[in-house]
Amino acid sequence: MPFQIYSIADFVKELATLPRAEFTLDGVYQFLKDHPIEPESLKPYLFFHSSHYTRNLIDKNDLYEVIAICWQSGQRSQIHNHRGQNCWMAVPLGKLLVQNYKVIAGSAEGGYCELAESDRYWMDPQNPGRVEPGEPIHYVANPAALGQRAVSIHLYSYPYDSCMVYFPDQKRSLEIPLHYSSEYGVLASEESRKRR
Image (cartoon, rainbow, N blue to C red; front, side):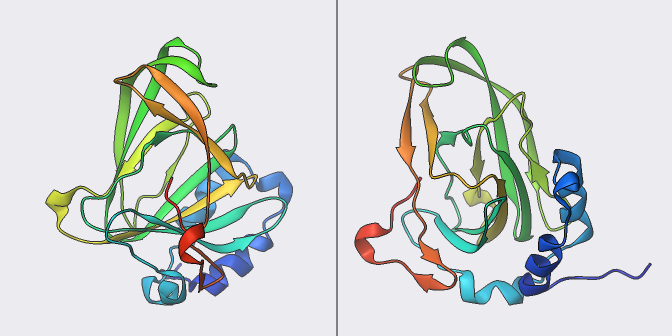
């Protein structure tokens, strides 16, 4: 079968036809592998910021949301979880590092919490990623050593509007709200633009 690359519009259209029964950890991961995204088609959704990565909503319904996250060189997320939701990630542009953590003491749900690094892996256009339910805590980074911007497409099921952020040095975690930097290609107002 010849290699095919999908515009983000076609990606979203194909995703909408995926039966709910196939919206599983393995099913969506395979979908990402089978539907690489054409970086040029993402331009309407790409808003970079010099001080933090941006979260740009592309598509959303009751089952999932699709977000483009834009990373300048050297930017990384805080250590966080996804509030029990499944998460898959594709990287149409650049290369990103994912560092996973496990809870070794306390609770992942807020307050006292001790973490230890577990596995780490790289994502690039040929290698998507997914969050394993057994170890859902991680950060994503665009290391400065790579010297390039990156864009990742995050697919969350179900949509959610807050997550836990972890502070290993302080051995604590807390819940924070999440915001979009843009929605459907329209930049949010300055006061509503916040980073995770």
